[in-house]
Image (cartoon, rainbow, N blue to C red; front, top):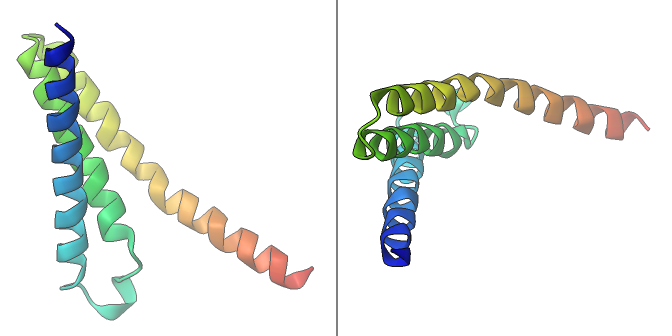
Length: 96
C-alpha cells in the first residue's frame, strides 16, 4: 500500500516540476519587461493544478478533481499581490 503513495508522490512532483520548467522556458520568449522570474512560479502552479486534477480523476471523483484544480488555479491570482508586497518591503527597507 505504501508503495502506491510513493509512486503517487513521484508522479505528483514530476508534473509540478514539468510545469515549472515549462513556465521557465516560455518566459524566455516574453518581452524583457515581463521576464521577472515568475514564469516558473506560474508554471509550477499550473502544473500543481493539473497534477491535483489527475489525482482526483484517478480516485474517480470528478467533484474532487475539478474542485481541487479550480482551487489551485484561483490561488494563482495571489501571486501578483505577493510580488507587490515584496516590492513594498524593499522600498520600505531602503527608506529606513
